[in-house]
Image (cartoon, rainbow, N blue to C red; front, side, top):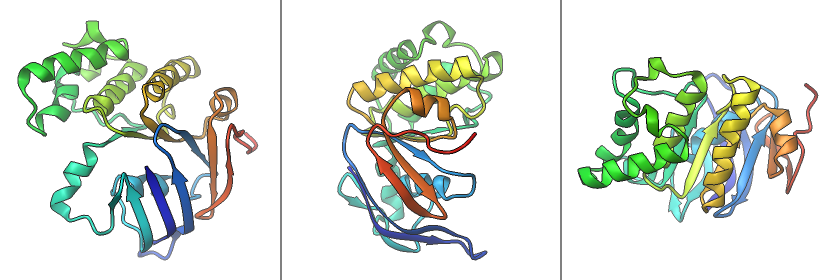
Length: 228
């Protein structure tokens, strides 16, 4: 599903965020990406959805070589990838329904299918009754649920989450994790960068630890492994 081979990423300021990363993630896996701040986690995540390109090395997503992908083919790739951000990135003037529907409208899905599918995913994240509200009328946890709904509305093969519980209180974070668990049970690959040691230690999945741009640990049902 996701293959990285000898991937390097050096930024113009000289910072090396990926230093020879090789990793394989299979369809249906749930993977936590952990490590200290500045270790290269966000770059690792961003390279998966081609927000960043490697300086050297090969990244394959579902058989597609991201480095060789033509710019006009990137939107097609991203239909197969759902992305959830720490700061939600919702459109403030659109309702909950419209924010989620937007991801389908850009690929010109039929309006009837959009309405049906959007209500399905809003039901999954527990927001069916708030479809007409604006993001500003929602709590942080509810806004993150909208972000998750938007990320899965096109039935992606993989969902990539960058610190999805970073701005949420502990109780809300557990609720968000239940949604990710449900998404994964339905067969979607989940790759999540996180600093939340309690969640990683309680809900066991594969753990990839990154330090100084290198994978230092890769364990099935691993622990967070860093001091608070």
